[in-house]
Length: 206
Image (tube, rainbow, N blue to C red; front, side, top):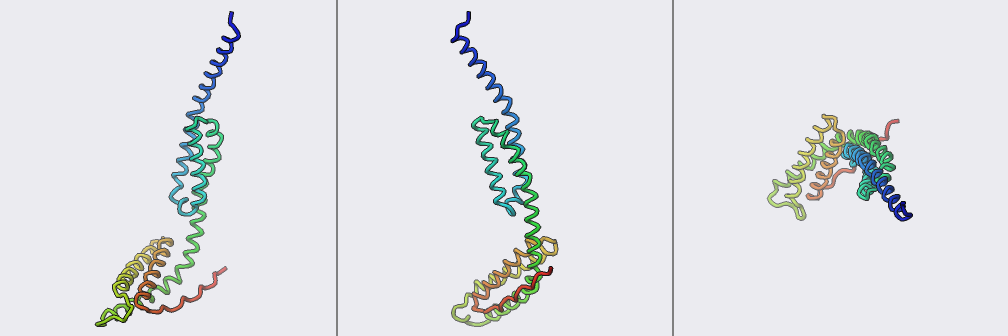
């Protein structure tokens, strides 16, 4: 006849076996769920990191939490949290594309003014640098080496900006054009040259 103690031991053994079986049954689905979230995050990361970094960081935190739960063998928590994390991860790419469209639209509005002003600025500052370079002694306080390097960089970068615009890469074109502007300003500062004030931006068309 089975004693009470033996019945208790048997019950606990059965319960433990059922619990282990349940954990084993949840482990593989939890692992697959994490892999799905991670795949979606990795696919979106390049654009999301550039355009919606805060959203990417939030989803990466959720993924890290899922991995921690998995390491702690809390597979139920993984299976409960994975669907929401996957939805957020899948939404990253769309959010990044929307933000990219906004950025490109804004930069497209900047390009005409840059294209109109920079060639003249580069030519003007380069001409002044070349004129000073022909002098036997440069004026006091003028850094000819810095000026020459800056105008050389400006000329090279402007070619890259125009090529990017021709290839319809507006972001690269505008970013490079702004580098040109910075180089021209640096060259002007090195030779104590005052640049003309920038023209006020034209009102955006409705």
